[in-house]
Image 1 (tube, helix red, strand yellow):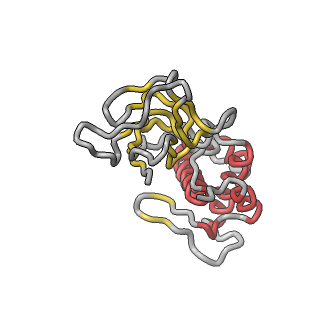
Image 2 (cartoon, rainbow, N blue to C red):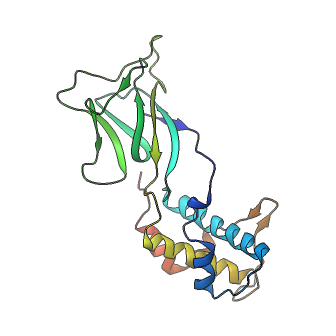
Length: 205
């Protein structure tokens, strides 16, 4: 079985699926207080991470290196959405080049697999000790897309706006979920229209 592991780079403003300025315009927020902007950024981050969890995709470019087992056949299936490869290292520590492999699917992003070209003489290799687990390294840029599609941005704004108004008890009888580390937004905070958008992106396997 092919498995992957990696360490994702820390989240940045690029991981927010809408900006604070866009959120203010959408929710008709007129405050110019910098501390309020921090809260709004936290809410957008909570909404963005909920979208990640619900779809099992991320909609921003992440630099990461992931490790995989030697596959049973000629195709290496990835456990995350791939945008570009920086370095592909075989189990025997050889750095493979694009003359040897191609990415699947053709003409579409993100990519989900790596296969050798028919003309290549290469094959997936174990390491020098005969180990086959997590010996293939894929360094690159990962994510469903480098920036959030328009409808994902809309879903983020809807979720964030719902949560923002809930904080003030508008239309809700329950209190907001807040932990020491910041804002927590859960699946019950997804408006029906936003949920319909996310269903179009949900990873099936």
